[in-house]
Image (cartoon, rainbow, N blue to C red; front, side, top):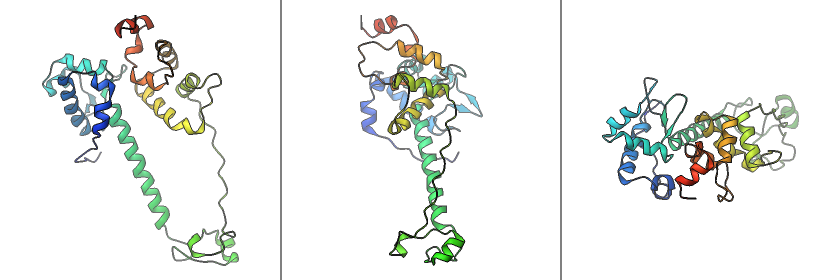
Length: 246
């Protein structure tokens, strides 16, 4: 992965993050150092060296803090840890990296589409109806006054969605009873599904931890599962005792 000399920092996000604000000043100072380290890792946002994940003690030694500081980052959902592989990672850095790669792919596709060679010998042209029907070329609407005769590409048939148990479990919880996700909500539901997959979640575990969300959380969405995944591992009464709800 190419090295970047800088990354975006949003002061408002830093100051308004409730999970980060609940950490001590020492933990927040160690966290920004750890963010810089994860940004320069082989896979941006994931603490690995030569394919091997960092241990809890190695993180503490590198930051020059006690191991309890690392535990407090995980407990407050600031630093994520995979229960299956033991890998530590940052959800924000991984999400930003995916967005950066997606934007780069879109830019390459747009450049190829704009500057691809034209069968008529130039990028912009005006062809007669006979030539257009023979070559099936696409016109630039700025080069002709009559745009109604421009051939329109046929709509591609939509591919059926592959079965995804994580997606189905999240959709059923967020949009009961049929679990049909509205078109405008598919993007953020997809982001929640990706985060849960990084946490090695299973449909049964998702439903169990969803039931542990306190009843006074009115209007809670499935985003709460990702944010409080480690906290919701226990029973509902344990969660309420820990947060002073009883």
